Length: 360
Image (cartoon, rainbow, N blue to C red; front, top):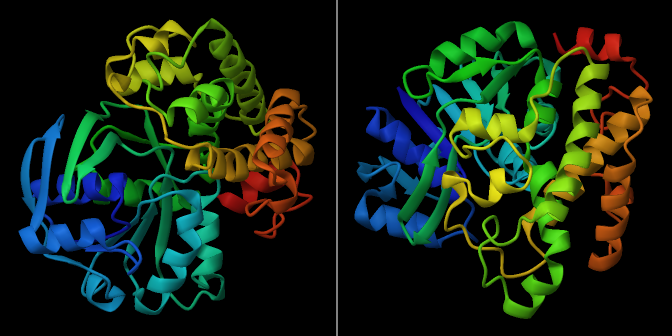
């Protein structure tokens, strides 16, 4: 199968490597401002990996020509932070063809909704199936250009939903040879809420803000950054996320339980579960507070949840407090920026039942 991977960061490189190792022909694209990995992979004609994925995988194309990257592909992955979905959707839209499957990996809250809107698919001119995953299937870092270290390839705990949900099983079958552990979600709101990053990253980053600024992130994010107090904050946010899922009629798996299913963790707790997790071992903190752990997981994730709570009548005081405090220390107003809300996708004022019907 011909596969296009749009995004050459940590996750994009891991996914390109994995699909290539499974015998698929992979084309890797990124915008010209992200040249480092693209150039290294083009020169060495593939990606080197160590850790849970090991070896060398050939990459058929690595470059900045979106037309070439999308040529004759059957499956398209958008892999990157939430703020990359819109520009990648706009770039690839002219080259989408009937029968293709597009997967936003991960959703990062409403990723498939954003793709459909930004790619102009609401007109129905393309018979393209759009889906999203609840999380990235890897814990991975690029350790030098064209080389990745995969701390963990997930063993389970990855959900997928298509938009509309009736296409979900079709998409899962398309990727089953590489991801046999992926399970269907009820709809794209479940995959959006099941992403644990907004539960974890803002809480750990905020309560370690002074250390990050003082050391430029020279400490272990999970092993040293997660203490009982940090765990209590994560748990409070998680309980509000779970309440949002309950209001929509599905169960959101608590993050420590999910981490055990995925293979990250051995203890289902919010403090020692994270600080002793084999899948998080050795991962350093970010070198600045101006990082996707705030930009994405607050500006997109927590804000999305806050607006969803307002719409469904679910109180989310800890999520609201995190947004307010982090906005203060970062000198911006994440809540008013709100790049992703249900209103943007024409779903404002829907009841829970109406949302479910619209997404099915």
